[in-house]
Length: 464
Ligand code: ARG
Image 1 (cartoon, rainbow, N blue to C red):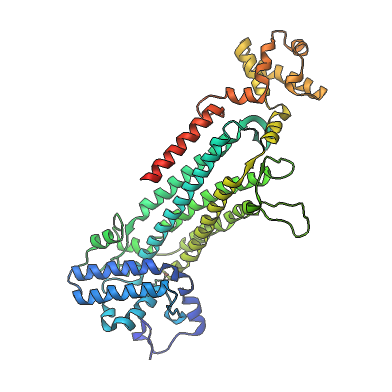
Image 2 (tube, rainbow, N blue to C red; image 1 turned 90 degrees about the vertical axis):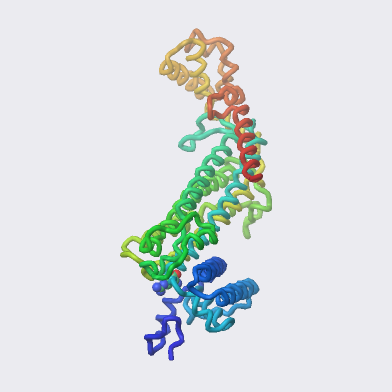
């Protein structure tokens, strides 16, 4: 006798290897809350529409609550032969309430069930990620405000380019994360439709009320096409795409942390709480959290690629291939949540080494553009000509092995006679950053204003 849910037509049990490749309970047990929540909504709707009796529905809901408590308490027995979370819950329900349990699966299928459960799970994951990203923005904006006037070199090609402020650099990441949050919010909007009631693929002949289950589960509306509803995994792909871009941002930041705390830069210091030692080199302080955040990007992007490839050749509607969606998503979300928290932790932990940053900002003639701009502004020179003059001054300073502001006025006048002593006012790094007051520029006053604007905005968000 075959005791499987679908065993009616089967006389033999499955081969061991069939069972092994088929079972998903090892990972989809993570969906237990969503599965039970969706089943409760379904049972309540079936009673409200008169498809099943009120008493049966009450027994079903009570039984489902018992199962939820059992799983939460770690008292629930999972077994591979029961395949997945959906059959586990139903089988246990039967043990608990008897024959009435068999009415729960009226007008639904595991296909719309899993699509519903998984959407609910991904929706929760998006909310969790958003909270983490909000906290990261908070950490960055606070650190930016504290470092609005901390001068560091800005780079292009990782070559010293122009002085910027550390606060400005940190606020750049606040902007990136704002876009990430926008992408997740956007994915959430499209995700928030209810597949339940699409049944196996064609809908059902029972007079179900899909608006009712949608409302109970917090969906904006039911999905419009039953075939699409059971075979769509766009919500997972979009979330993985947003996660991939977000993880790239975290990885870029992690790379900067690694560089900044290397001996050659020495721009920041991470405490013992966010570094590890070496088993052989006692002097080492390794930024492992940054390195691992940087590395998590590999598996997150890998998950997106993996699921895209699973989906790419599938005909409508459901195929078992789609069972392979979950591990990819679970792993990517777990990795991203961890990387976000580690990044926020590092941001709060890091201390700027203002002196080393400032010294580096002044090196390599980083204020050469300020000299050229001064020539344009004060002497009315065309920028291209100013660029040439500045190039000659830099070459002279380089030859003498001195900083720009150490070239004497007499020497500068040999290159351009119209230069006056006023020029020394723009050659220092402080004057340089202070002058960058254009919208979005690095001036400390700008940074202070932007950091405060972000902190106020984040506070408003937290209040709602
Ligand atoms: N465990 C399955 C999955 O994750 C549930 C859906 C099974 N549907 C089916 N027709 N066998 O996709």
